[in-house]
Image (cartoon, rainbow, N blue to C red):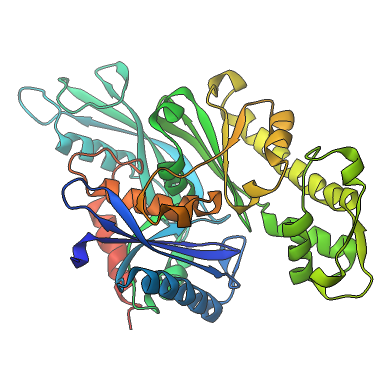
Length: 413
């Protein structure tokens, strides 16, 4: 098995570190899943690293699981990037078409994108993705692919995703400490979109919501383009925290209660919601009982706050008629019973749980909305190797890529 055919994706989340390894068919570019790892994550809070050593160990545990299953060792990986430090901004660039016959070439696209990316960044921030939203040729607007067309003046509107440099360096250090070089940082919601959204959903209009452990990310697509993205300060770990306080128990025991008895809204009959459940054996305490209704009220309050945040994000950029494909929920939090119906009622849009696209090999191992980002990293890497394939992440600047790969290597043992 050729080393160059192996793709690895690592999603370093607040609750778990997920690793997926795939073998890429050199003719069809179809990835075949051969290894999957999933280890608890203790070193992050709200997407930020708070314990370097713990994060290094958690990544190592997940990667070793995947490598043992795959029977191969990986030396490079696509790594998901997320957290409250992520920022985005719109920019505009203008250039003159270079060729005498006025035909626009890929070089012109690169130049106008480079012009649009010449912006004032916040202190200690780096550009992660430059995503073209549309081109204008001599006042002819809303052009998606300008290559081959003729004109004198070429303009581009781009969405720029930025991340805190120090966070990227810390994440690189943790990955490199496991003898793995970072192939590329990928904004986590964009990786998830690569796995769970199809072309029609992006074209008609949809909002992808990744309900993770520490944060929730939203990414809005319309007419095939990424219009808006945000990271919200609510994750499924906050549900656990609320249960801990309300029931006066420990975090790990509250997590077990959430996983076994957590529910949202009217997912079951009222009579069942009022049932008293014995959790003595579950949490190791004698004669401990709680009502399902009490657990549900605790979770409902926090999830309602989350959907209020999402409603606020929608009001910034769009109206409901722009999202005929509705909302797609992924992430570990999306598995909570009743969350789909609650989201429909509160957001007044169609909502469904995302499903990863079909992969060959051990696809059953990642048939879970919590693996949307890790599976998407594999799809991202595979699609990026297809000649002339348009990448969801837009255009990378060669100088920037060379720069970040240079300081990634500084952390290699």
